[in-house]
Length: 103
Image 1 (tube, helix red, strand yellow):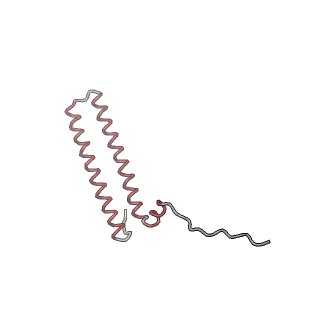
Image 2: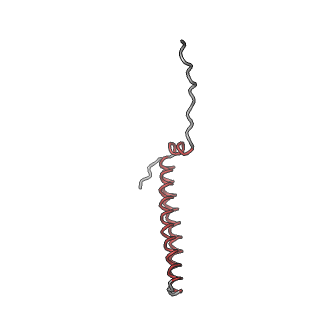
């Protein structure tokens, strides 16, 4: 009997995520850690927002709740600014300083 026919060798396709991960691993890690940290911080601020609503329902004085709401707003602004700045610095280090990003 003859030898079985060999199957043609096909190039295995990789999915998009694995291609991005293999080519830009440090950049992807920087993006993922920043996104996870940002989401956790936003969840903490959401908990603060819900607690302010609970204080309002409990009859806490409205002028004090207004002050706390102002602090809560500025906490959002600071969080966005700090995470954006840290993300830009990390991406700059990863892209332009050839992976010398250090945490």
